[in-house]
Image 1 (tube, rainbow, N blue to C red):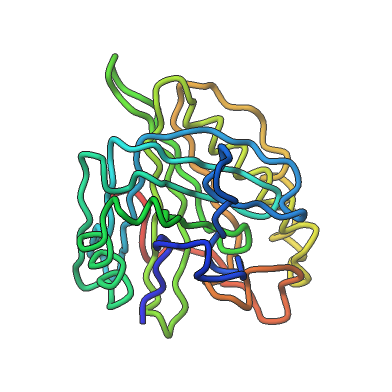
Image 2 (cartoon, rainbow, N blue to C red; image 1 turned 45 degrees about the vertical axis):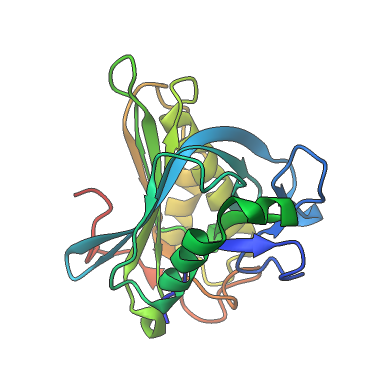
Length: 257
């Protein structure tokens, strides 16, 4: 079954945030709950999120939600996404050949709708740093344009082996390139501290990513990691490296069309 990067979560659904974030306590300003190991977070709001699955050159948009309030946290160990008003925007949920897990999520959204928010249900997702394969930033174009940041991860072979891209639609006041830099430097620092399998040229490349200079706020940037771990519970937390990471090499799939 394909692993869904985004799902619906309730406060009583789980107490384990290995694969999906937990919801924050009711009555506060946060959607998701952070842990002590997240360290210092960089938080901002964006206006939409989409998930695209790329396999054998075929791009399939699994999820798209627009014109909503999406809360994003960049922490020392992951990028956390949370949205309470997922059913109030102008976007849609699409289900294709991506797998039953996506179909279940979309079916829940279409049937349950806004009543769930009073019972503490939100759309959540996360990209943990060891999974991150590539970060792409596209700046806003024009007065009404939105910038975007894409986070690419790889499914396990059992899940289909596709490249999965989570895209965040950013308001004009949030620089896509600076968000991409913040994610990249934190992810690279995490890998340097927690990846036992990182050595030689791969470690040097990771050190360069951890120290990447501040880009122009209005430029497009792409940061590629020398290796990454397929999305799974076993690769979600450190230390990693007991099993080899996937060498980036020449990518079979590309984030940008």
